[in-house]
Image (tube, rainbow, N blue to C red):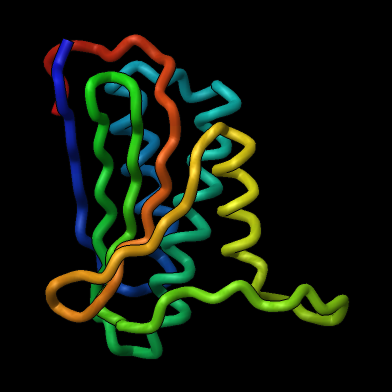
Length: 146
């Protein structure tokens, strides 16, 4: 099996790109052997949707695009990162009853922990950031896909 597999896509910071990011990651993971109906696949689709939505909504026009990276290391750790060029790191907002938004990072963190993973944020050399989700991978990896 491969020691390392990766795939990435760069999309415009547009609301329509959220579903494109989700579909792209779902396709890559299916090629790597994760059944689309698996519970982990549902969690990953929701995580990618939340991360992409944050990249589109909270960059205040300072990031014309965002990039989704999918990496599988040694067939045991899946990392998904969403990179934008806005320098501000995401913040967890207080959960007010009347608040309609601001819970995305709470949802992402909760889903990551539920899947045995974690969330982290790292700055990019260009001044932006990447929000990473790291999850254990227990699915046998399919050969020949990148």
